[in-house]
Amino acid sequence: MTEDLHQLAAEAEATLHAAKDSAALEAWRVRYFGRKGVLSDVMARLSTISREERPAYGKAANEFRQTLDAAFAARQEVLRQAELAEALAAEGVDVTLPGRPVSLGRMHPSHRTLREIYAIFAEMGFQVYDAPDVETDENNFQLLNMPPGHPARDMWDTFYTTTPGVILRTHTSPGQIRVMRQYCPEPIRVILPGMCYRYEQVTARSEMMFHQVEALAVGHNITMADLKGVVISFARKMYGEGRKVRFRCSHFPFTEPSAEVDMDCIICGGQGCRVCKYTGWLEIMGCGMVHPVVLRNGGYDPDVYSGFAFGMGVERPAMLKYRINDIRYFFANDARFLEQFV
Ligand code: FA5
Image 1 (cartoon, protein in one colour):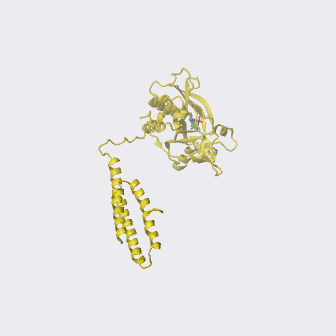
Image 2 (spheres, rainbow, N blue to C red):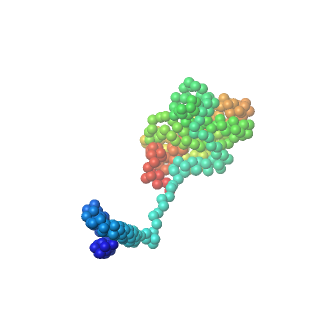
Image 3 (cartoon, protein in one colour):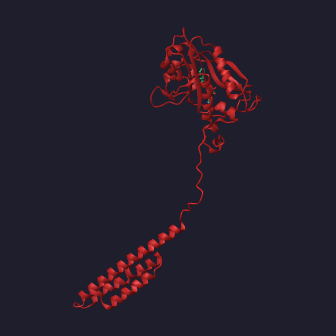
């Protein structure tokens, strides 16, 4: 390197050393490496000097450039490390701070109610049987004594899948066929819990999807007295000894005789409110003796066997129990509602 270039390099290194942050480093870079910077001047001088001096000057100019490059890279690394250390010190994790509380999930009120129902029926010797939500039209209607075109189907319009004859079940009753076909000719005492789906107007007491629990008992000499005994005993265990229960004649194609069961409305104490449609009573289930056609479809000879069945909602009893005045809260996914059930 020529004397001048030595001196220029020394100056450059001194100013580089004085650069204390990335802004100053950038200013230095522009000053030395920029288009009109010092290095560019040094290189431009090559064309102005004599042919004899050129090789020595060219070599010196290259060394000058290498010196600057190396010095810049080293300074850049020093500043990067310093800035990183500073940022880490400023943003350091304080390990002594208390952790963030983990929010715990809670049992959904429908499931709490289901568990209470399971426990009561378990005491009476009923096992839980799982049947699918997506059912065949055959199980949901036909084998339950509702052939295509039967007017009772109008009460249970539903959602259809793209597979012909496959629907979302409107009630848990199709599970009766599955249990009977699986266990025939054994006696049966099961409950069948699960979701049901109906294409209907959503109101304070009716949802498009809701839970039901079906009960089915099949055996010898089972009578309506057994049905009433089980239903009343269930209602008293679930809602307290003083509960009023009434059986109202009704019709279901898959039971004969059939009845509907009402309980006095706990929300209004029987005075009449929006939930009980101002009657003082809330319908909690449909029931009856298993129809001979259904017994036969399940594989049981109706001359030898008899049975009872009932199907109840789950959200409506939960509304009674927890004094919830609108069924829509159950599936609205509002945490403020769900958090109340600890
Ligand atoms: C049935 O679904 C019959 N399968 C019940 C049955 C089973 C009768 C076995 C005889 C033998 P129903 O449509 O009434 O019946 O419904 C039974 C219960 O489900 C009602 O009492 C109610 O508690 C509940 N439920 C019915 N529709 C809705 C709805 N849209 N929203 C919430 N709960 C409902």
